[in-house]
Picture (cartoon, rainbow over the protein chains, first blue to last red):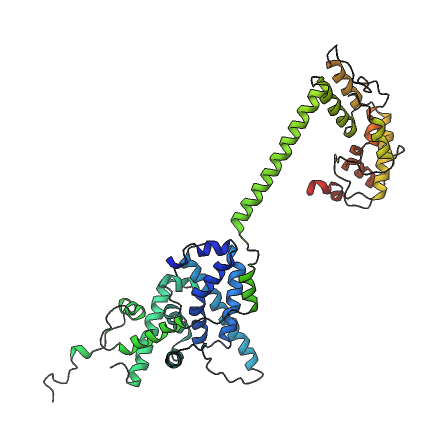
Length: 183
Length: 256
């Protein structure tokens, strides 16, 4: 986000429907990808819920475009945690098998397959690192957030985020070396 | 045996993960050091996830696109509210000032004949002061006594007053009327003062009596005209137990 959304946020706050749609088109892919790779049960539904909340409260938002992106991911991250808690409560009663959620299909089958494999790979590797390290790495990589934005989403200091991403990448490198991938 | 004495070559030694290296791997925009290709590949796969098309908006979201909700905007909305309040206040103050100037001019008799007659008629129909010449005083009394809705509202209490309150305000036997009749009439005093200020050559228009000559006192008009139905009367009704409205309801007009 940035120049391509210059002025769109203002229009959205003024109640322009086209601006809301534009914000959704620009931000929803990253939000959906983040929720999907984080293992959300119904990532598409959750993405819609996130943006309903975003657009309901966008009038009260005050900040830059970059801060708006952080704000959107803050809501997405909070909804993700709610989703996990909800599922944890259900898991006490019934055992639910969690399958990988397929992303929306496109016309390019080969690309869809490659994306699916890549997503599985990312999810598998991220499952091996600590949750807070995983949050940082995925917000930075999938959410395309800066250090400062990630710190804002997770309510941590920039120094703490740096330490988490350093440890997370180091842990991933060890996992990859164990598989013999890195060399 | 290798010539290096068993030491790994410098090129194959994995670099330490410092912040700069982390940023390079996460950004994916620089050369990847040897030993971090796996990490770079992981980062590339993760970055690709943000390019997957977004899910189609559901019905709720689509409805928001079609008809955006009424968005909250704390700062600007407050400013707008203040601006509206300021505009309304300016209108009220301006209208009040114009009305006072017109009434004063009419009281002084400096208006042209037709304008003087019109202003005096209106002022006498809505005000409790009887001293300006008025040929329509009987009409105002009739309107009030029949319970008709006054054409000009001069005070609060009409909207929130109960039937008993209204009858109290229009009944000549009400405590307020009695109190008004039993005391000196400040309205008459004011009317006399205004009459004293009238120019000596002032001549009443047709059907208009000179100030203080109508035979109707200010207290009579205060009881029978709509002005008598303001918050003071309602407060009196409440004191008499005729109204069950809370005290703040009597001034409902003021709130709105």
